[in-house]
Length: 456
Image (tube, rainbow, N blue to C red; front, side):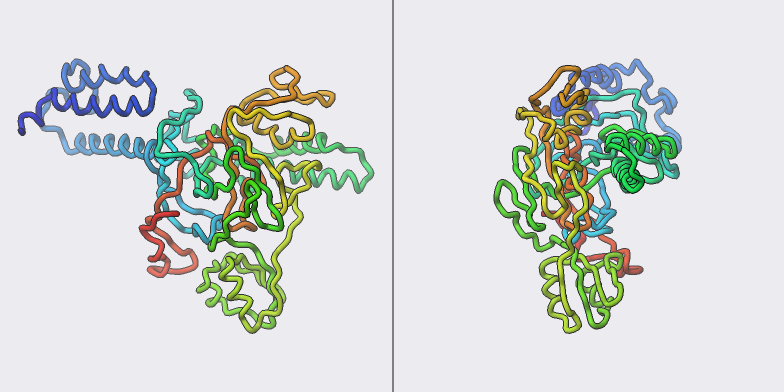
């Protein structure tokens, strides 16, 4: 038996079988080029592939053994990260109380099928920027592959907690990435329009946008990123391809049905009190220190339905009112005067679906047509042109999703930057292996009740 296990043909057969299964999974027949390489490594041994080793030497030095182990570890970890799962940390409160700041989790790539990297040449264990630098790319765009997703265990389902590449992260203001590039231009353009109005000057929205864009490019360092190197975001998928969404008074409706009330979903409330709350009491309820805003016997707190009832029952509470806001949201058009708590009805695009394209509904789909599906989109004399041809219809090439945070009033989500294309989906939040509370110290930082917990 021992002779069989050490036989070179047996080793070659096992490795070849695994390699061919992987090739079949990836469905890239170019990988068959690797078969002769494996044959030479295990059988013919004509090429000295392990160039760091001395040839025909049985006993290698410790240094060579360490190099062997390091190379194996890097390759194995890279393949696991690319095809199976990836570690992720919750950086913001947008998903509280479902996911907490300081949660460390594994994201399953096989849940929806791993997508092959658009930029395969990159430094191992990095995302988009080299460590200890602000903008030095950790990848090369010398080779760029088109979008391809290989077989997985299933597809995205409504209410899944999904990790995806930030759609508005294609262009980045270096050193000032939050808010995103487009929000910064929009804010500056709105300011310019307001100033022009006060001075009785003629300035169209298009002129203000162009001026603001030119200004930010002149003053800031701007870089572009491919899809797979954009920031990773985590939200709940509330809208599927083909769905119709509508938000009424902070309540979400999907295809006319009221969304399930999650016990962990939060909204902001203004609370008037006769005396301040005990801060430790608020922390025991699960309210982070950063979320406690107090001013002149008034609090602003994000609360779940259960927390809301506890607050209302406190003797020093005079009144509780839900926060309302009239700020602009997607698609930032006068034709759609929506807010974060009242918007829609909004249809979610589905692959293969054909829509009537008009000047009125173009704001909903212009980023899909131009940026995500890489067409040349122009409007001349109220006529829409796609790739130089007049267009009054459009057929979508991909499925799209609508993502929202459970912390509804503290989440930069689809309400602000729109649809998430299928080629931006990274994986499904699967398992929390560690959770640290930044408001605590030493062993008190560890949230023991959240460790080694599957995410539902």
